Length: 214
Image (cartoon, rainbow, N blue to C red; front, side, top):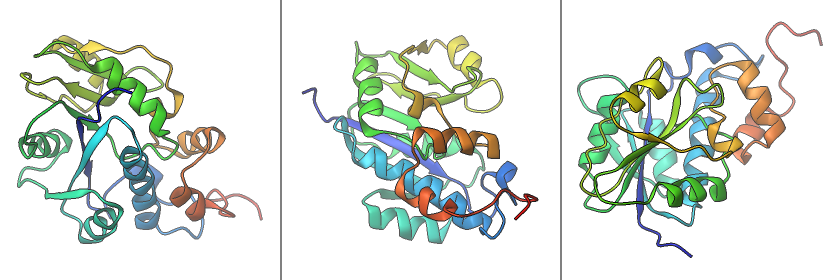
């Protein structure tokens, strides 16, 4: 088995403003509860990954900090500058050594074995950065930096192209549960078909899409 040496940085926005396109998607499910469940399943999968040494959650949300800290993540306060990229940079700066990975917090179907395969595929010579695009191929779910390389995150619209332009090399494995981030109700349905983690499954069980006939 390959070495358990990766530190994974997962930023979690304040729950009231996280995953805005999912707001009101499920009748009777508070938005903050759904956003937290997505993060819980992501972090729990990372903690169960045999390639991962430590998980750093960067957040300014007290409830997210308490909940994800109880799961076993190390909590890093969010930086004064808002946004995913400053949060990833803050987390990477808190890593004491070894390879670093940036992972989005909206992967509720993520399987630890798929993440391990991607991280082991990302291992390579010093100074190399790699990334995994999302299912549509335009966004990024995972960015890795070998020792000697700055993480240099470029998350945001068309981040896959931005990471490639910055010199990061794409990883092209299948990994359907790693690539399935959840921004919309349609994404959540696909994640459900892949198999949701226990937290999101519990929150969504029996919930109807907003506006659906009962």
